[in-house]
Length: 135
Image (cartoon, rainbow, N blue to C red; front, side):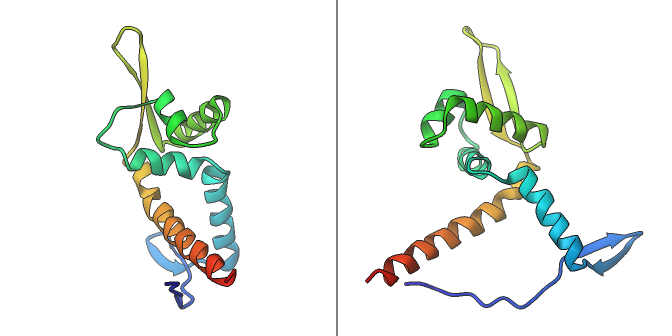
């Protein structure tokens, strides 16, 4: 079943000098660009979702590489570094022999969960709509 959603237009809020006001369209577009700069691309949101769904596990590089179908080791390494730079994940060197490195989503990184949840739900609905349109 395909569900559609109606959204009323709501502008984002900005607090400036302790006063809340509606963001202008330009401010919203800048904010969206900033978000896409940090989260954009094919892999970052998938990595965050993978780690968020496994907060009770020790996730090392190879487990991530095997768990996210299609990502290369080089791309995974690049994306992990960028996510760490943006404080969304942590990289922890374990005191093991041989040394292992684990990755985890930070509390701040968990703030991205509603974005990924919305994308997952939209993706499921979109897939259903496309299947239904094909007959």
